[in-house]
Length: 365
Image 1 (cartoon, rainbow, N blue to C red):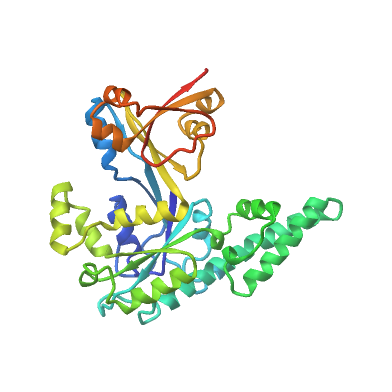
Image 2 (image 1 turned 45 degrees about the vertical axis):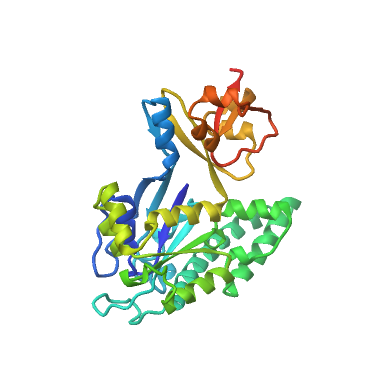
């Protein structure tokens, strides 16, 4: 999974990126301190892996990972060359979802690029820059499609879609609000990689005092939550500054610190949950002496395609999958006990993999 982090300058975006990835991207109280996109890979915390590793005495443990791309702070007019311009938007065209960091705290010592704190205005500013960038992409595609559309019905149909989408964007609407049920059109829209067609998670960046009640008493957060609900987006509350402090602690110290703050989850935990929920993702597990590993797949994935995540040969030669639920395996304490209880299942090609399935694939080479 790959997530692109966007936001106006000085909203806490790079501070959050640093704390999530410990990648050391420069952070400072002035615009454009992130000159190049920073990339960091983060392991998805999963207690199940630890217990399976202990059970199987695995030599190696491999968690699922999320790749974060931190994009330089955008400002009004970025798509037309203001600030650092449009060049950085290309860096998030390949991401699965966009994490939009929004400032939801007052602090006279932290400059706001527009002079005041207003998260909905900030969201609108970023949205317009993404829309303008998408229009440019479509204009180039339209020019290319027009050359062959006169003698090709499929290209003529695609050109018509491109023009409708361009009009939709020019009216100030996001690509993801464009309505169509046509399978060809849906496939083309996926192919275009339009920024405003991607799922969005809002990170409401608050002061420490607003963490304990998850921003319930923060009017900025409430405004963002309403906007997110109306826009079919996810939102989570985080303090980038607290995350930066947590990032320096070991696991035990981190737990104690969160308890002292009255917080159950770190910002990273919240973001991962929001990401998996928004993108419809789950994890299945494999375990043995060599390795215990988590594999991320979409909900609804059938066993052969899940096997293909490990290797294409597994999917092509799929015979069956031997499956036990993680809870049953841990409860009974061993695979032998699972077999004795008759809880080890043999599933075929139509089986839909569930979150927490521990799987051994059988296949022909």
